[in-house]
Length: 371
View 1: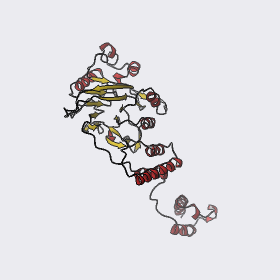
View 2: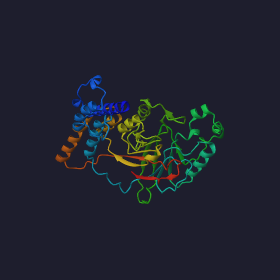
View 3: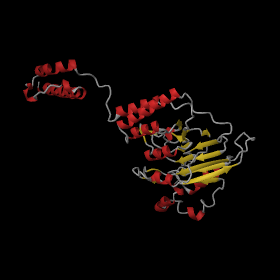
View 4: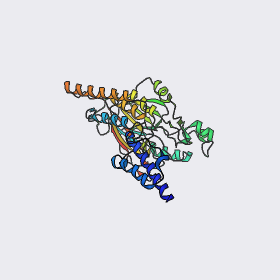
C-alpha cells in the first residue's frame, strides 16, 4: 500500500506541474499534508482537474518563438518583385569553394572565383598542386582567397605552429612566384578592366570593370587559420570602412548569418558580416565553409530584410517587428498607387561548397552566376 501511495503522489505532482504550465488559473491551492495519504483521497483531488484541464502537450514554447514567427510571416508577405533576367552582354562567373584537394569539372566562364579551402591540410605540396590545377583552367580571370584549411597562406598561423612544411613557405617563395594567372586576395580590394568580349558574344567589345573585395577570415572554431573572435563587432566594419570604392562582388570564406549558413539546426554565419553586406549591398556574395548549406539565393537587402535579420539574430524586439509591418504596408501601398516595377537591385548570395558529407565524399556542381 505504501508503494502505491508514493506512485500516486508522483502522478499527482506531475499532473499538477502540467496543469500549472498550461493554465495556472485552474490550479487550486492545496496542502499536501492534508491529503491523508490514501489513494482514494488523491483520486478525488486529481479527477476534477484532469477531466477539465489536463491536455497533452503538443509543443514547447521557446523564448522569442512568437516574435520570430511574426517576423517570418511579414518577410514572406513582402513582395520585392521578380528577379530580372541577365542582359545579353552579362559576365559569366563560375563560383566554387571548399574543393579540399578535389578537382571538379568546371564550366566555361569569364571569371573563376574560389572562396577558400583549396586544400585539406594546407601542406606545401597540396597548395602547389591545387594552384597548378587552377592555373590550368581556361578562364581568363581567376580569383582565389584562402580558407581556414589553407593554413600555409596564413603567415601568423604558420609561424606560431611551425607545422611540417609550413616553415619552408617563405624559402620556396610560393606567394611571390606563384602562377601569374591567379589573383590571390586577402582582405583587399581588387579591380580588373576587361576588353575581352563576354563568353560567346564576340561582337560585344565594350570595356568592363569589376571590383571585388576578398577576405579569408572566419569565426573562430577550433584551431585553424584566418580566424577572429565571435564577439568581434568591428572586424568587418573596419575592413569595409577602408574601401574607397563600393565592391560589385564580395568573396569571403565564411557565410553571413541567415544566408545559406544552417548546420545542425542552427545558423552559424557571422551576424556582423551580414550587417556589413547589408550596408554595402554588392551584386554578388560568394562564400563556402558550411558544406551542408550549398546553394544560391537572391535577396533584396532593403529595410524589411535588415529588420528581419535583426529579429532573427536577437538584436531586435517587437519594435523591429512593428517597423517591418510599417515598411511592408508602405511597399504594398506604393505598389498599388504606382504599379511599376522599379527593379530593386537584388544581391545574389552563393554558398559554393563543392564537397559535402561526413567524409567529403559528396560533390556539388559549381554555381554559375551572370551579372
